[in-house]
Image (tube, rainbow, N blue to C red; front, top):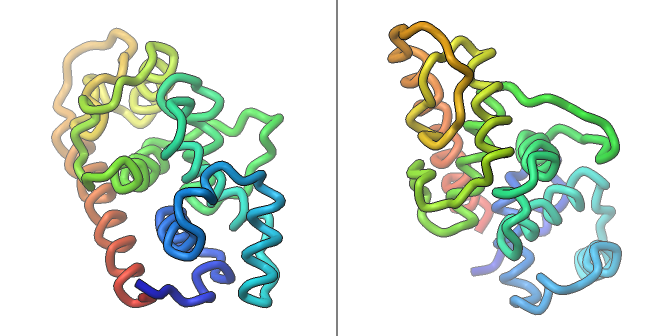
Length: 188
């Protein structure tokens, strides 16, 4: 596969696309390079300027691929999820997520972890990440953990019908997976 240098220039390029293009060009060795070295190498090889957002999104994808920090540390979960939503974030500040942002991030994670499945049971999330996500989904108006994150720890609440919200999050997850796969196909 040969990927366009435009993937690295386009601010809306999905993190998964940045990861695939990087692995295609440099192989698995790139996963261990220092972030600044990798950014410099991409800029040099493609004669482009890689934005800080693009570099951070690539590093977020590498983090998901090579560590379990996304699954175990709520701060990493939050920062990576924001980046997967094309949102530049200050790693030192709290930037709470919305339910829709978690859905988009989970789609990227599913692709990175190989599978494009919304079955989060394959990923072992820590209690702190599960509780963080549960609070976000609760604030979204849900009373039970959504189907895209069945392991979320939800605050106690009266039973209610979450079908519409579940369907909306599932549709968003699926649309993001489809967008990413289409993006890769068009930029190959």
